[in-house]
Image 1 (cartoon, helix red, strand yellow):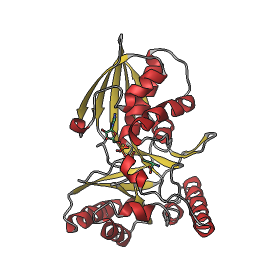
Image 2 (spheres, rainbow, N blue to C red):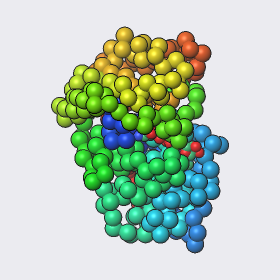
Image 3 (cartoon, protein in one colour):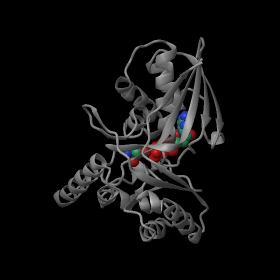
Image 4 (cartoon, rainbow, N blue to C red):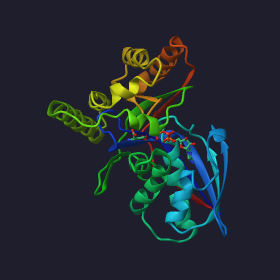
Length: 293
Ligand SMILES: Nc1ncnc2c1ncn2[C@@H]1O[C@H](COP(=O)(O)OP(=O)(O)OP(=O)(O)O)[C@@H](O)[C@H]1O
Ligand SMILES: N[C@@H](CCO)C(=O)O
């Protein structure tokens, strides 16, 4: 048996739609695999009742098929599905690393990124690597159609998860079909600022780089209370706030001493909108961890 712990991730980070992603220190999924004649899946943990065990509908099924690695796959969910915290991607990344080890496929973590991406496509309808790349490689990642760049950044974060569900598939339906040159210039400037902040471990630059006028506004409309939560987080010291992945999670960059106040402000902001929420005081973390039992 092989066991892998794969972290939650926050994709897009505002200005990096479908490109930027960051591994979080917590929460995480734990996936255990054993060889079998055909793939079967067992899901337990957070939101398991909303996750199919059919290999054709669970992200780990496509991964097992891509690696030609049939297995009994047990997924213990620590990351709620439809959260914006890379729940589907964490399972796919964990399964890719675990099955690669179980069947001795010898692929590198970078080579496993597109394979885990096939799992993501099962649920969102399109391949996007900005959750599975940080889940496998850790840190802050820049995923393009050619390769993935990793920055081992140390940035404190608060991820706030409201008790509402937004599926990536639905959230991708509200993404604008195109952009103006003015929007492109605005986005490139913020993306470059955020990346510089990651390279310098500078929460102020990272926060400035989280501004986005293209995708985030359309998605904010899907998250009850978002504007108030964002304002409350900034007032509590956040350097930047945006939608985490496809939402409804909300991610804030900050200095470590402000993390607790920001977490409380975000939860209270959602409660003021009549929505229960929980906050994870976290930071950019490592990629998936493998344990050979
Ligand atoms: N192993 C899995 N873990 C979680 N969700 C899964 C898994 N397999 C299939 N799903 C389905 O994927 C959907 C959740 O994925 P979705 O991409 O919408 O949200 P997310 O991964 O939590 O957030 P985001 O991708 O925006 O960070 C649910 O409909 C769930 O049933
Ligand atoms: N870039 C993807 C990430 C989903 O977590 C999206 O926003 O649809």
